[in-house]
Amino acid sequence: MLRINDTITIADWELSEAFSRSSGPGGQNVNKVETAVELRFEAERSPHLTPAVKARLKRLAGRRWTTEGAIVIRAEETRSQARNRALAEERLVELIRQALIAPKRRIATKPTLGSQRRRLAAKTQRGEVKALRGKVDDE
Image (cartoon, rainbow, N blue to C red; front, side, top):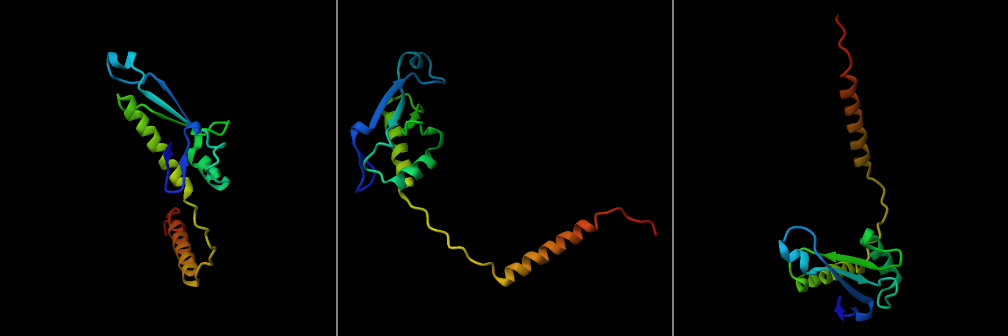
């Protein structure tokens, strides 16, 4: 059971873990101990998340989102399997929390008259600077 916030918790059946050998330096320990954790969360089938949250989660997850609708998070930073497991769960919780925040709707506004005039003045000035970059005539 994984707590996201006061209202949302993820059941154990939605999560699965796989362990493998970690890459990188670490001496003989790396060759015999399976410390890397691959946490898989079945996001598409989760009854706790609304369709809007799932859509935001899919966008946030990026390439970690599989074609079956699961999120795969890999953690292999530390030499401890328990610490890597905690890191992977932490990342998943943070990702879901980000997806829970609905983006504010942008209200389209008209540019002010002053800002339009400033923009046109800046364009005119830039054009003059560029016009002066031409060849110099010998008079």
